[in-house]
Structure formats: structure tokens, C-alpha cells
Length: 125
Image (cartoon, rainbow, N blue to C red):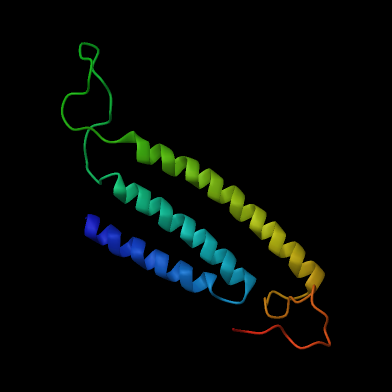
């Protein structure tokens, strides 16, 4: 099962990097959202995928008996979901505001800080 999740995580990372390298802002936003999901799935997979009992300690014991589920990756993923949602909402508002001002979502056409009549900066060194 972990091999299937490893392949899924690698596919998520590959697609998200492909989308982040695009020159359109909407694709970049989708890449950021997919990258957040890939990281969450990676944390979940790293926390071992087992069907075990919840980490509840019996009243007469001081430690859990047997193998139990690890609650730390689940807590980390819940926190990461909240943070990634707020980050995505911020990026969405920021990109919408840039689209309102510049009337484009193409990053090659977003050259507001550079004069329109001059040559573009050097592409390489």
C-alpha cells in the first residue's frame, strides 16, 4: 500500500512542479494547491499506513499495549490543511487583484515595472 502512495505522491509532485513552471497565474495557483496536497499525502505516508487501534491508554496501564496508530502525522496534516487553505486564499486574492490592474494572467505580459518601449532584460548570462 505504501508503494502505491509513494507513486501517487511522486505524481502529485511532478504535476505540481509542471504547473508551477507555467507562465499563467491560474496554473501556478493550481500547482501551489496540488503541491500542498502532495506534501500532506507525503506526511501521511511517512507516518506509516497501518490499520491499528487508536492510541488510547487503558485505565489500568501507563502505556498503550501493542501497536497503535500514530496521531502526530494526522495532527500535522490538519494544521497544514488550514495553513495551505489560508495561503491559497491569499494567493487567489493577490492574483485576482493583479489581473484587475494588469488585465492579464500571463506573467510575460506583467511587465508593469519595466518601460514598454525598451528592450527586455537579458534572458541569460
